[in-house]
Image (cartoon, rainbow, N blue to C red; front, side):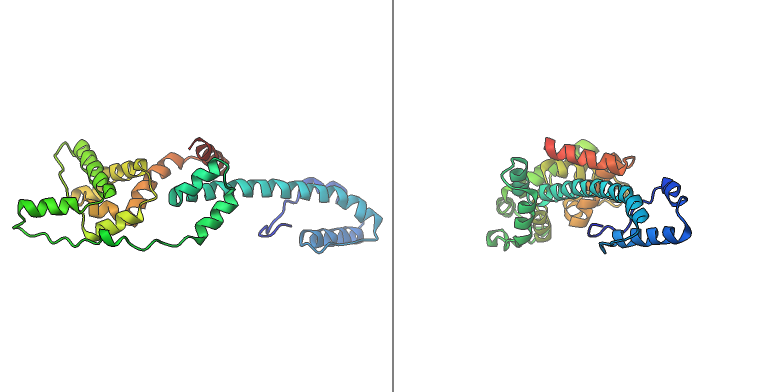
Length: 250
């Protein structure tokens, strides 16, 4: 038995072999079987048990190989998905065969969160008497990524609501949350924002805002809605095949 494998298949047609044994031999046979699947490396002087068990042993080995192959595919698909989301540079190296999945995972585990960029720590105080000069300063305090996010958010909101959206400011919390989402692609942001704009709760509560979508738990929730809709009818084997295909294509 392999590590973490807690069950085996016992085929029904084994009864044809067991029925030809007397009760004592059958008992010895099953004891031998249980010792084998628990990695106790059993030996027997009973020739009948030894001969009868050989075919069972070969079936067990074939089943174990199938289990290990399936486990490997599932593990690789999950690892590729995590690398693509959180460590895009490592994912690209795996896909270009510059690194193995195991090497990339080891590097990813060793990485630590980068210290926050001191230049991004901007305190924004908004009052009813903000003049034009203040607005320009706040706009200039945005990084390129923050500016692109606001442009995308305003564009998608206008398309969904047919109303102008001209949000130009992100709070300190919004910026921090956006930094935590740095591994996601533009496509991921489009999916999450569109799903948020389609959702009933933020619409009726007037909460179709950057602050709402940039909360990490909210972002993942709206992003996963697309994944769940695509995968709701998939079997485990279909999911493995799809993930493997997507990993190769991307």
